[in-house]
Amino acid sequence: MQSQKDLYNISMAEPIVWSELPKAQDDPQTIAEAIAAAIAAHEADPEAHLGEDESLEAHRANDVLDHPPGSTLADKWTMSELEFSTLFENLSVFGTTNSVYNLFPGVTVAATGTGSGGESALDVSLEDRSIALDFSKEFLIQFAFNADQYSGGKVQLNFGFTLSRLTKDGVGLELNNTNKRFYVTDVGGGSPAYLNWPGFTDLQNYVVRIHNVPDEGIINIYINGELLGTLTPPNASASDATHFIFSTGRSSGSTGVLNLISLFVSMTP
Image (cartoon, rainbow, N blue to C red; front, side):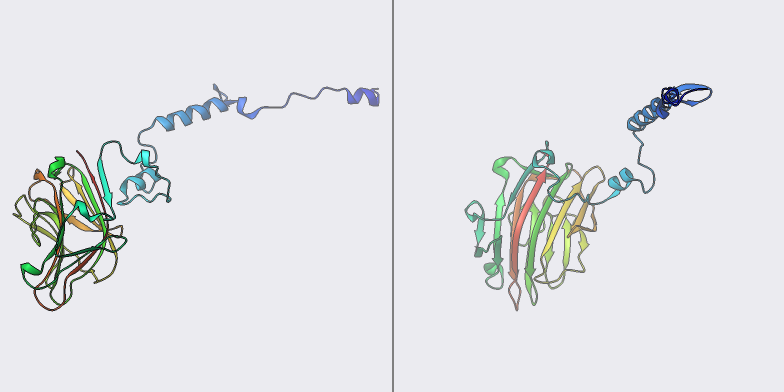
């Protein structure tokens, strides 16, 4: 008969390590090895998470990618685009006509009377920098603004090929008694296409994004992050020296006023 002391000295069996067991009776691969192999195969699969309603499929399909504020670092933003932005702090680098003045943040352009003599404008040419607006290349134009164009006022923001006031030549936005719409034209203003903006309200702040996507042959127009619609350039290869002009006028009644808060441009060289 074993003594109580001998009972304490009986060796216990080695504990079973589950991950080291074979995954099947007919397969010597261990459970740990099978898990590692499955993870490696998933990481190497280019179609992973691209099924309907899966994370990467939804990420690619979104018109706007929503990342937490501050999560995109400046040095990760771009390595290939030409970018510039302004709050219009220094108006000496711009051309001005009639009533144009700073009002932080941004600039105010206000018509002073009827006819061409009362038109006001802020403009800049990038021709000396050899910067072209090229519809065969991707570009993005974003601006924050509000405007007052009721009772005969006229407001126009033109990004394109002219420095003529209240002229459509390139891509832009026109606001007047008759039209609240975006447009795109060929060089010289020919063959215009339009996208109406039915929800525009005087003196309400908006952020507008104009995104040319040459691979799809369209220009996406966003208002405050929401897609308003698309424009199709009449000439997908239109290209010329870049000129921006922001102008106001009036035909009668009240004055057209543009309060341009900020401007950001990103272009493929």
